[in-house]
Image 1 (cartoon, rainbow, N blue to C red):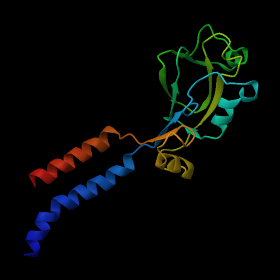
Image 2 (image 1 turned 90 degrees about the vertical axis):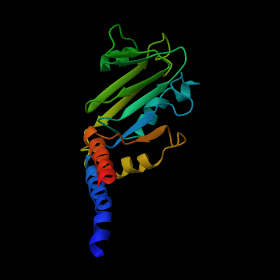
Image 3 (image 1 turned 60 degrees about the horizontal axis):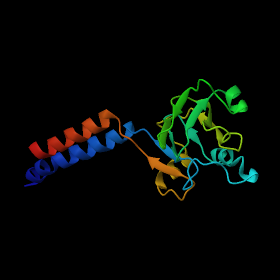
Image 4 (image 1 turned 120 degrees about the vertical axis):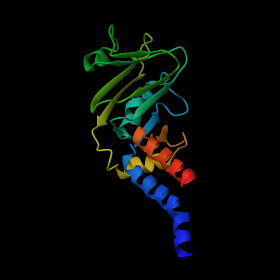
Length: 181
């Protein structure tokens, strides 16, 4: 009788072990919504001309995190430090004007963002983001806390935890083992 219950629960335990083991393969990353509910807009007054840099300084960005820019009749450019200082670029490193731009940080270092619309950058629609090189196996307490908070009311931070293909494969195999065992 004990053998029968073990055989019946074997697929369950196999799935549990595979699933728990696959959790090690997760990559923690976060999507940040630039400007929160207002989006990527020209600051309303000179007092707010540094609002995007203030926002960026209150967040911790890691490699593989993304920033989402929502805007109308505008654009987002990633430029060099020199072009950032001049508020113009004839050859940006990245350009988008689709109204809902997602930019993924592929390396640690400094990233310089400006609006491509004439005069917007001069009025404060620009931002510098420092990206840290944090090991994915040991997420910081801050990033774990950010992942738990998924509402846009938390300063524009949206949590994400995409799965690697190996995690998905292990999950599918464990389901198949459960069905055919």
